[in-house]
Length: 110
Image 1 (cartoon, rainbow, N blue to C red):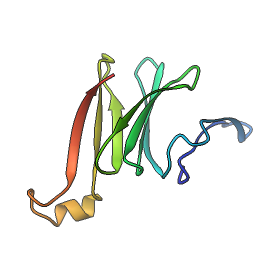
Image 2: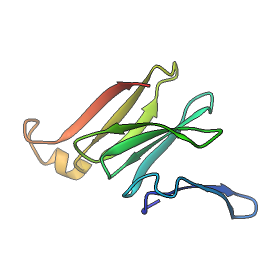
Image 3: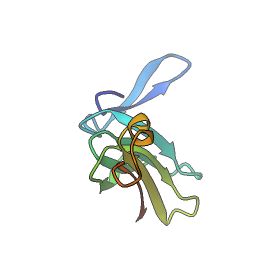
């Protein structure tokens, strides 16, 4: 959410089942993706980090740091890598030249 928290809800009851890691991020979470086997969860945030969580225990396994806000994160289907995309807002990137725009994609080992 906007505060950097991650919640798990019961969609039938609308109840907050788990509010894990009250401070998963310092700022807004921009994206959240599950691995194809649903064993991992990755979040991307305006706080210039992405975090990899164990989907069963909800423990943070790794934090990936970037120089700019992270807009999106994904886990490779073979689970050897994660990819992060981020930087300036898309509108700002399209209005600048490639040399002055600040949009990056980074690949990391899990």
